[in-house]
Image (cartoon, rainbow over all chains, first blue to last red; front, side, top):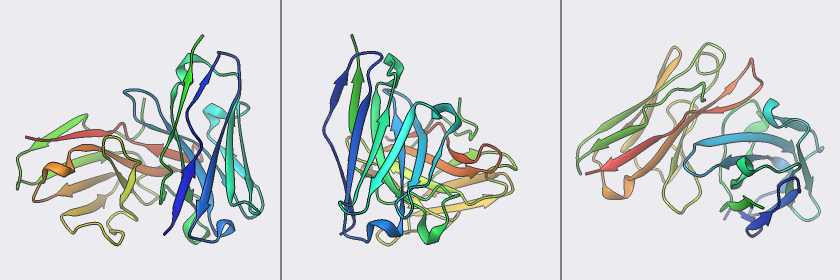
Amino acid sequence: QVQLVQSGPEVKMPGASVKVSCTASGYRFSDYGISWVRQAPGQGLEWLGWISTYNGNTHYARKFQGRVALTAYPSTSTAYMELRSLRSDDTAAYFCARHCTGGDCASAWFDPWGQGTLVTVSS
Amino acid sequence: QSVLTQPPSASGTPGQGVTISCSGSSSNIGNKYVYWYQHLPGTAPKLLIYRNNQRPSGVPDRFSGSKFGTSASLAISGLRSEDEGDYYCAAWDVSLTGVLFGGGTKLTVL
């Protein structure tokens, strides 16, 4: 079955960077994009950006431009999200999700989602 | 602050129906498809409704979506205890060129 499996929890100091992985199985990786979404404690969902796993093109939410970097490697069916200059309000669960069905990336279709990776930023 | 506006909470008793609204603008809901996600405690979000009113395979027909103008709704009939959780609407915004989520609605089954 189609599945996305993410790396484990991380604890980081303010100012550091974190890199979360997302490994796909059950479908051809380069046929869909991967988006990243986060949920801070007690808050709603927030989209960070997406990457085309076909050609590596990226599109970031304006709020995160310059601080987030998405990469993807078809050879290992793995996508990565790196967030730099971490602050305490970056503490959140980070989810990857399959995106861009039918080549349409200007949509909010995400299916399925990874299990989430808790990133805690604390001194 | 979310640009897509949802009520923070909704509730109903088992067997009843409930409707969750999602209000946006011409740059998002008014021009693009609406999607709904169910986020149950301790699980990953799950696609519930796509393209305004389509159900993925495996989603019960108790869940239905609709859209009119710049607003959308998710209706749940025959409430069950396992429906308790958070529900989010989402849409692409053509002005922001990005995905917007509603603030989420916490559904309680009394």
